[in-house]
Length: 137
Image (cartoon, rainbow, N blue to C red; front, side, top):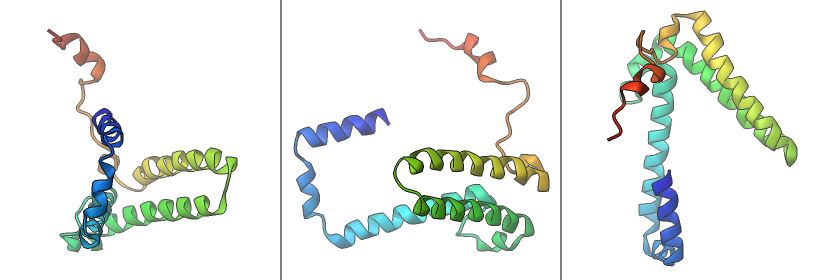
């Protein structure tokens, strides 16, 4: 993100943003559609553990449960954002995001195997045990 922000500063200070006006609309629409596809596919892969390119795994009962929980959290966040405004939105939305993560990571594993819902950290390894061995020279 440091590289991205510095590139925005360079593009803005050099006034290169006007070049974007010469990019055809179908190219921009295709670029935005591909980003949307990647986001949707990544979200479904994180929630259900399978890709949209292999939809047969979405009919599995476990995948449907995960998708239902993730979709209900997303719909709740959407309507909560639409119903609030001003300072309340600033305070309310982060609390709802934390609550959604809580529901997804705490309630979900109660329904099935916890290792299916979270990343498994190898036992005996942590960032604190690896830092002393880090060679910075």
